[in-house]
View 1 (cartoon, rainbow, N blue to C red):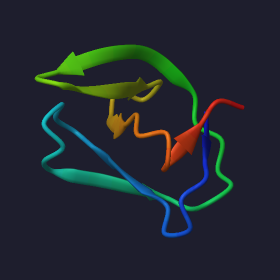
View 2: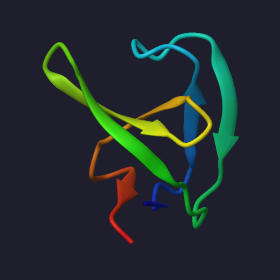
View 3: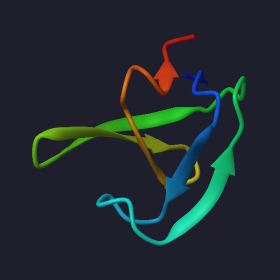
View 4: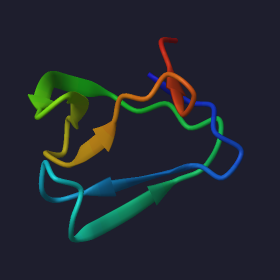
Length: 62
């Protein structure tokens, strides 16, 4: 996946997007390990075990 949001996206330690761990800038390529559902939203699990939103306005398939 590639970050397309002008402000970038944050990666979090928990699936409910708490405990911010890292920030990815626009244009960064991130490796997705899994896709998980959380209530009515979708999260991407990265190769380092952190979670990122799967919002198509913020990230896109490479």
